[in-house]
Image 1 (cartoon, rainbow over the protein chains, first blue to last red):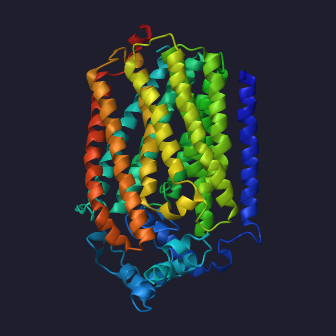
Image 2 (tube, rainbow over the protein chains, first blue to last red):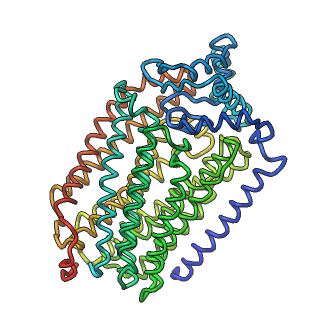
Image 3 (cartoon, one colour):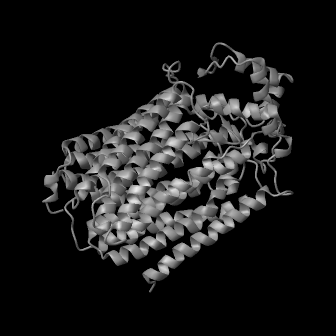
Length: 153
Length: 445
């Protein structure tokens, strides 16, 4: 029968081993050749867009990369989707929503009116464009307009 | 109660109860917004309500864990807390940080990173607060007459929880890297070190309530927390499937997160077996309800419902949908909410000397809260599965889908009302116990 000492060794040993593997895998997945985070295309505009995204807690309603609050639409590949719906004017539509002085309201659900400047809105769009080019291991196919077209055919 | 200083715990529990009521209130604001009654939008938009709801969850649970530690550690170490005044300073500063953060959320002051919305300057205050707490607990423990496994596991959980807060404070320009290390905090807290805290509290309660030999209980405690880390650390990978990192996490996360229910299953079997084995029939039935309830509901909520969408093949469709909310609610309630209510139910009569052990109001509170929460979980689940099919399989527009599933949120609000009624009854019971008193020292537990 298992003794208390053996049980403690199982706990401490197991924890140490799995934690070391975890650190190793973290280093592996961010190493050159394995990194697919689109880090190389980060621009000052994208970084500013991320700051605006965070300082307004956009994730408190929307989702991005599938993470957020499920109250407002997923915004990964949003430019592509809106381009299809608005004849290539996706970026302009996003900017006008962000710059609007009154709450954007679709199907009864309101978005806070942020009244952003042209520059701020462009930064957020640059951020969305950068997000849209990350390799998401197939998740983008589930939410992208290409899959939608395929289904319609 | 054996030591005067254990009374500090009462005030941490009282803060917990207050914050829980606020958390539920903001939950209702979100529930009503989802069925079209968004009348408070101008003052409390959804993102504010959401940040308040989740952050209050974290703070009321932390306050509960801290209260539990202030109650358990002196008893386990067999000495008074090293400094009671500093413990009250820590309580007040914790409440202040919480209040400032929540007020700030109403004025667009936050970091906007899911679960870690508290703005950076307040993060430093959190660190100071937690260091003070750990200092008091660890000094008491190591100056004490004995260092039991239960006390060590509980303290280790609290120490690691503090250390793991730090990766969340690292600044990153990339959303992907930011998210990657944010999960080091969030996942390794709730599916790692918080389970140590839960295990420590559970072990203390089982020793007190069942009378089973400490050696037996603590041996199994090691096995359970061992299983937790064995599966939970690499199980972090299930958050990395589709956020823009290497495919290796699909395999590693898939395998190890599929093993995560084992730790919760072990915890449930452990609690039920110890109860059956125990010869001591402690009169505090309510504490026993909440203790066994926590072990069983956490297995269903965290273990089974987590498993339901943890495999990459399923998660590719459920990632970023209400299915996550289904799992999240029952998991947090079972694993952490109920264990905090269990330690409160156990310690309150001991601190106040009023033995309201088996009141019908207390039993009603237990059943209403649990049935209400299960109903909420089912409502989230049905809404989530419908969302997955309509949006991800049939490619319907997000907002059209939301209109289709709004009816499930009517059910959610009704079940939440039942849940909230249970919590109100629990708090009435809490209030009826009165304040902690030194006279309780004389009374046998």
